[in-house]
Each structure stands twice: as C-alpha cells, then as structure tokens.
Image (cartoon, rainbow, N blue to C red; front, side, top):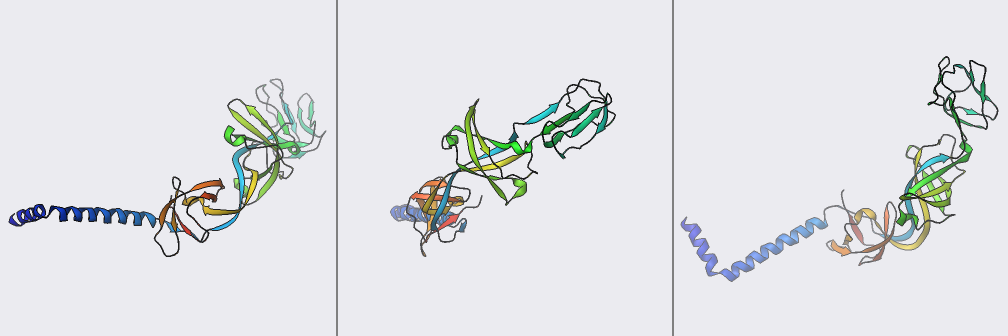
Length: 270
C-alpha cells in the first residue's frame, strides 16, 4: 500500500513527464495498429500497366420466339408416341397419335421441349400434349439496371458464359434495347451456341463497351473504401487514397493517387 502511495506521489510531482509518457504510449499504440493494418494481408506482385476491357455485366436467359404448343381437349387418350423429350425432330414428322387416330405433326424442325403424357393416359386441357421449340431461333434476354443499360448500344460485342461450361465462352451482339416495367431488357443474338443450350437456361453476359490501353492496374481485391495500402521499395506500406476508373472482375484502373508501376499493394482477406 505504501509503495502504491509513493507511486502516485511520484506521478503527481512529475505530471508533465507523466503526460509525455502517456502520449508516447498512445503514439506507440497508434503506430502499432497502423503497422498491423498495413501488413494484414498479402502483398501483390509489382503492379504494371496494361489493357483493361470496359464492360457492363449482367445475367441473361436463353429465349426463343418460335414455339409450338398443342393443347388438346380433355379426355383424349394417347395411342402412340413417336419421340421423347430432348429429341430433335424434322418438320412434318409425327409427334403423337390419339386413340381417335389424330396425328400431331411437327410444324417446323425443333426440339421436343415437353411431352408430359405416356401411352394410354387421358389428356386434360390445362396440360399441353407436347411443346416443340425451334432452337435455331434462340437469343438471350438480359435484364439490367438503367444506369448500366445507358452505356449499352446496338451492335456491341457480348461475351457469353455458362457456369456448367466454364472456362468455355461464346460470342454474340446486342440486337435491341427496350424498356420493360421497372427494368431495361437487352436482346442479344448469337449463332455460336451448341444444341445443348436450351431455352430458359441462364448465362452470364459481359457487354464490351471499349478498351483502355496502358492503364495502371491494381487488383480489385486491394481496394478498401477508396483506399489502397501501397508498399514502395523497402518502405512500410502506407495508406493511399485513389480514384479508379474502369474495373473488371479482377483489375481496377487507377486514375489518381500516389501509386506507380513497380509498387506493390496489399491484397485484403475477405
């Protein structure tokens, strides 16, 4: 107890020295936090200049305008079935035959998209006997926010990809832009899709707006609320405010900020 009393008396007599000591401790704590923050991640390779694609991204659905749906009267019995779902048929080929010897033929070549009945089953009006889709007439409808859609023009190239077919991708072109209640629809035509890509499948679309040459590029994962931790040479990483322009899924173009080619940036863990 006496030692504690002596300590307080010593602090009171030397209050200015004690204040400086407290300030020093606070400063060390702040510096330590900055250093810990600066090194809380992984340094990138030296950043370089290069080309970046300016694009807008969205999701699309495979669509077709040509579809044949045969809705029978209730109570008809299926007598013969000539094709199963997923088969490709030619124009004029028989699809189904009822017990009354009524034969339904394909009005055009296409894919048997739906065939819900089996032989001997009776039909009912709410369920079509068969749905035939012309897969040569496929296109993509992509939904986009108005801000993104305002940068899209007819004729721009589109990179199309499917999760199940990565890393393969396909190419198309914007063919139309039109408004729909509360959204903008982008129509994309492509002759590049295989027959296995069917209506109602979804895809990723990257609409190419332009290219930036000789852009200073940093990993997009290094950005944190407009700041980047930059390491130049052997110095401690420092926090730098940046303005960035074009971004893609990996890189961001630096427009303003104290960053140079050859610097390294801290990639944050998410």
